[in-house]
Image (cartoon, rainbow, N blue to C red; front, side, top):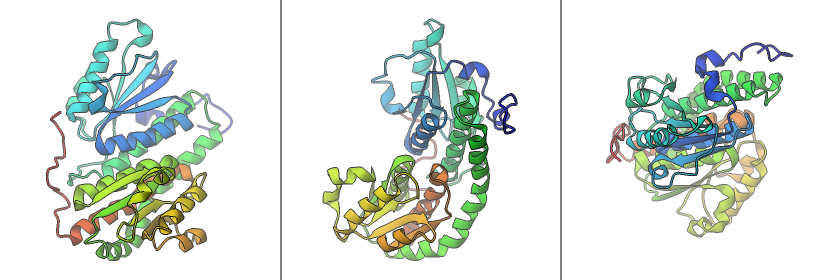
Length: 351
C-alpha cells in the first residue's frame, strides 16, 4: 500500500489468494495442526491477535474431534499440514465442515489450508489453499517448511490487518520491509554460526536432557527447538514458557541439564534474562539465542548462539535457525541419520 491511503490493494493480497468472502465479518479464527505445524500455528495465533486483532485459538487436530469447542459465528478454520496428508488434521477439518454445513449462514464453514503440497488430500477437502512454496524437504524433521509456515502466518496476519485497517499503513510497510530482509539475515546465521554450533554440539554428545525457554512470541520457538532435538538426536528435551520454570521444571535443573533460552530484545527480554539467571543459580549451563553484541546477555550466558538484531515481532524466524543447527550437529555427532530418524515419517497418514 502507498502511505496515506488504504484504497489500494495490499501488495501481499494477490500472493495470499484469500477471497473477501472468507474474511468478511470475521469474528474468530481457529487453527488445527499437529507437531511442528502446531508450533508454527502458535506463532500464527500471536500474529493474528496482535496485528489483525482477531481472537484466535490453536488446537491439536488429534484432540479437536473428541472435544470440539462450541460453534462460534463467522469463524475461519485453518488447517496446517506440511504434507497435506496428516490424517488427524484432515479428519478434524472434515468434522468441522460437516457440523457447520447444515446451519444458518453465520455458522457456515470457512475453511483454509496451509500446505507445502498442492497435490494432496488437503486440497481436495478445503476450497481455499495457501501454498508455502518451500520446495522439496528431504529430511523427515521439518525445518525449512516450518520457516515457510511462519512466513505464511506473517503474510496472512498482515493481509487481515490491512483489510480490517487494524494497523497504520506505515506500520504495515515497516513489517513488510523487515520480512524482506530476513532471507539475507538467515544466510548470515548459516554462514557465521555453523562452525560455532558444531563445536558446541561436541560438548553435548552424551547429554541426556535439555530445557528450552522462551516467552511471548518466542515461546513456540522453544517448543520447536526441543522437538527438533528430540526428533533427530533422541535426547529428551522440554520447552517451557520461561516464566513457568519456577512452577515445577526448575526442580530438574543441575549441572547436567543445559538450558537454552531465547532472549531477543523486546517486551520480555529482561524477564527472560532473569529466568535464565535463576537457572544459572541452580548450576545449569546456559546457552543463549540472542543478538550479537548484547552485553547483558553476554554476561548471563555461558554460550551464545548469535543472530542478527531484529524487532521482537520478527525474531522467531531467526531464533529457530541456530536451534535447528544445534539439533542437527548433536545428532550428527552421535552418528545418527538426521534425514531419517527412527519411528518417524514425513507424512503421518495414520490417526
